[in-house]
Length: 263
Image 1 (spheres, rainbow, N blue to C red):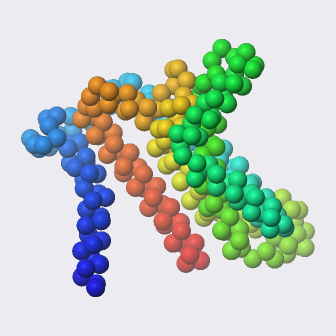
Image 2 (cartoon, rainbow, N blue to C red; image 1 turned 135 degrees about the horizontal axis):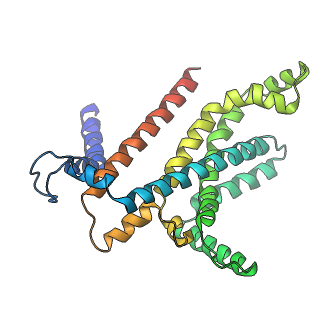
């Protein structure tokens, strides 16, 4: 059974990581071929650094992801604390259901509904353009927020409820007790939620496509536009860089979780 389990696991990992391995190897290929490796070269990485439009799309994506992460982490922490303090089981069930909707709802439905709402509000107030960076930011915060909440809620439920009460008995205000006692206890969940929000925002295409305006293009949208013609090998180089950045964030998240479990 152990041998068959290892073989099965090996097959699963091969299916999952073989495409990434091919992408990584051919990002260093000297030629454009995806079937023949003609020699090691950093040519496509150099071309990537000279592609102004792609670098601008990367900059836009990072700005959007960082902004959405900060906002959704702050709002998600406040929401998780509020949900955890609800006494009514019915109220908690309603809030949990509402929180789950953006995650279970198909991205295309979320994207179209948000686009219609932004266009309606824009026309209602007579705006010249209904879609912009700000509409994309609101959309990204909308779908990142539930993931942050669901990372923080378990930490709040694991925390000893007498700790903030003891802090207030010793003279802390409710706000002071939160920052001095509760925040350190739930910090691993906040960090994990922030990393998850950043990676989700970085990767999103469907919702961004429906809520983006003229003049602001994210990397997934640019790559999609390039697929209508041809994807040059410098995109393999960019995808390799993004993969290692995401892998680094994942390792940080796992390290934080392991440290918290050990604690």
